[in-house]
Length: 208
Image (cartoon, rainbow, N blue to C red; front, side, top):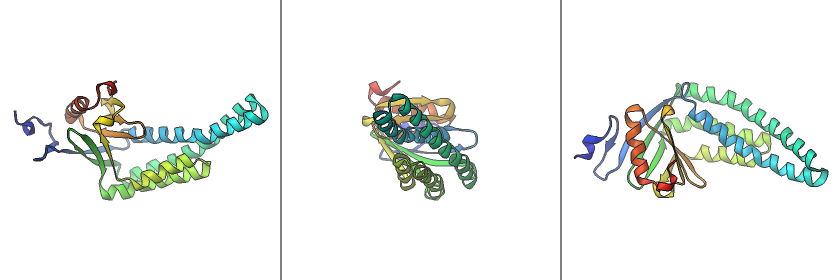
């Protein structure tokens, strides 16, 4: 069977076996981006809180350490949430409510590519993440923002996948490595094809 004829609508393949498709996410209806940003910032915010917990526990005891930990977390989370409440709607409006990306996939891996025009617009959110890290005293949060601001594409080799998570209702496939996480999007007509292709090429132990 001709592989090109078996592809779902919107997916193309070139002479070198590279498949491509474009996905346009409704940023108002699909919360995937917001959930991901929230998780990254929450994890990053733990670093200064944990540091102060140990320092305070060493000086003043366990209960004092726990109290300081939660006080710092409340402050950091408040700052981050406040900035996200401003940033996410702003970026959504700037992008016309759409997050548009191109995917390139072959048997070796997949590339998540932001188109140049939208990449520049999304730097607004990345820079606000950097500001959140600076205000909260979290270099990890600031670093995550700076990395996002400079990254236009993210490539995931299938052989390095440690965990594959499928979320068909949100049209997303998570490809997680040790220190890198990629999000692959596909519409209803494309999702099963893309998910099954990835499952065939990642290590078996990575599949949930």
